[in-house]
Image 1 (cartoon, helix red, strand yellow):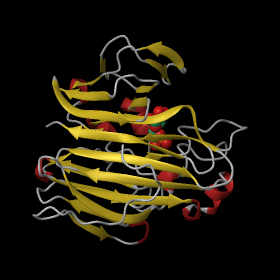
Image 2 (cartoon, rainbow, N blue to C red; image 1 turned 30 degrees about the horizontal axis):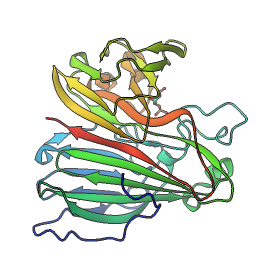
Image 3 (cartoon, rainbow, N blue to C red; image 1 turned 90 degrees about the vertical axis):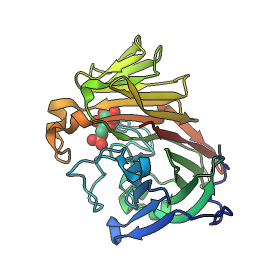
Length: 320
Ligand SMILES: O=P(O)(O)OC[C@H]1O[C@H](O)[C@H](O)[C@@H](O)[C@@H]1O
């Protein structure tokens, strides 16, 4: 784990000799995005709207790892369909009443708020490869009036996106900056790009209890280590002891998703009808080319007292 303060370390250039990552801010207004590229060609793109990672290319920049709908709104008009939307402070539809998140929209406000780019820092790993960390911030002052009214609590989020040669790390740091305690849920709604859903399996959840949202929210225990996707899947796996969930394609490991201080994972594929019914999911049959494996803390609530900090996230490894 990195430091648990809520502010990113001062911008610091690497002491390492050799070229550093290139970081550019492109576009304007709600379409602004930060693009970082390593000297070896790998890259990441983060839209300030939602701090949504919309592209992550590994393998010298040749392999796109994230699925992004052709009709994803990238102009700040709605949450991005694809990439890595950040879900905070509530997952899914909020509780009907009686909770401070009750009047928030599905998946909360983080994915539809404009974040600040706080800066970059560079580092070199043990093998001498460069990596670059981009920090994004969202505070109460940055929320829409609606969100501020719906969730009248004082908080600070710093979201750090670190691009390395074969991995992407995305970590949230949540601080309670107010006088009273608050509760939240958090999830990274990662859309992985895959070649063919019929050849994909999600491994590493054996023995874990899950709620099946397709089967009327019934509770089950995962009895097979290998989950094949042959229809709509929407499952919330909770209290997972294993750190790593793997996406295997054609019998070969494709991605490892390593949880950091997060115990839950949602596995989602909308399949034929649901994909068709979503106006921003395109092309219709691209449910064949994506799988969401979403790490988070969504069972119950994380509680932060005044001044307390929570930190958690994921490291995703592209294994091609
Ligand atoms: O359409 P969205 O609000 O982006 O939600 C997309 C999906 O997110 C999660 O995976 C939930 O478990 C699903 O129930 C939901 O359909």
